[in-house]
Image 1: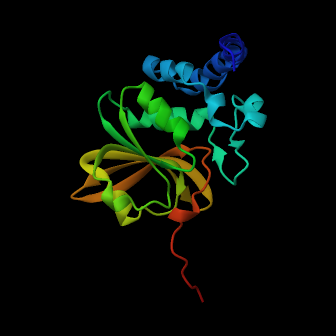
Image 2 (image 1 turned 180 degrees about the vertical axis):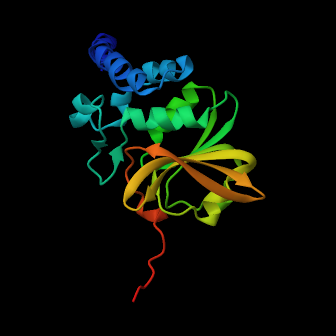
Image 3 (image 1 turned 120 degrees about the horizontal axis):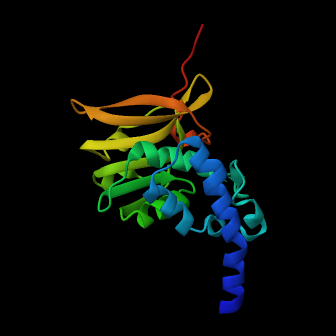
Length: 199
């Protein structure tokens, strides 16, 4: 793509990105200037297939065509607000896709490692911040082990069929999750609770 065409494409999406910030994020309590600056700087349309670029800034999840979705911008805004990321922190993003959330963290100055829910997390080390780009039913030990002793985990949490934003911190070496409120997350089957028999 020529430079002129690239600039035209960028200009075309800039109003949609600004509208997303003003009508989806600000009005819903995502007001931190650094976070809003990251959303303004990272082109969301680059994280969806070319034939879905027009949907990049709608206020709902965008299907990516491979069974995964890009979470709504508000969901990522709520996650980052709860996470309170600090420049220079090491962060792990677990998701499929997860790349947009990772790009926002990099824009905020964090050192980001990306992983998918199917990856072996046990060899990744510990992180000050772990973000799961989706909803989980349980925190597997390998995921809990990636969180530093004084770190935090921010994720979607499935409770009785409803997805909620949750934050976790380690207490006496055990990760405890606290639900913060309903949020729009795609459920990650890799983190489903084991099925139990009932009579």
